[in-house]
Image (cartoon, rainbow, N blue to C red; front, side):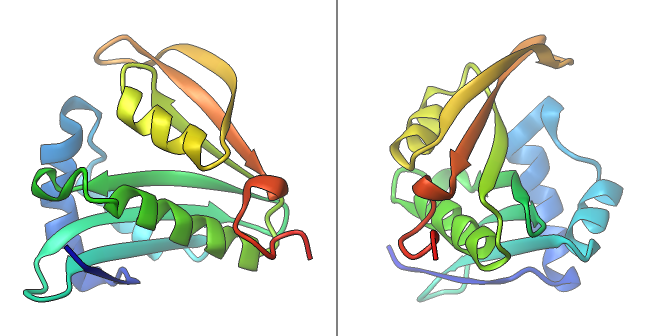
Length: 158
């Protein structure tokens, strides 16, 4: 399936908030936090929709400055998983981080999410640390991962 990515706007928030709860369950961000994230001037949020129908398929967010970036979230609607959309969103965020001059990009991922960990590792992220019980409601650890400018998309060293 083909997808189009666009900058998230406030009108996308109802679908983002709905999917946040479905995808992340007890780890879901509040609607208020979602509004803050999409509105924050240092953040870059993308929405993915199917090319044909325009159906909502996922979203992702980055906070980046000249020095470093932090991938805030990558969320793919269940019906669209396994089709490369997570990788597409990740690469788009990494490209935006590169454009902003970030030399390092960080993220936290649930230690019990092997599919996400494998995706990040395949895109050059390495594990730096483990935060025990980071996801407090479930008591699940988080892996802190980093990609340096060597792992960012081609042309990022320039």
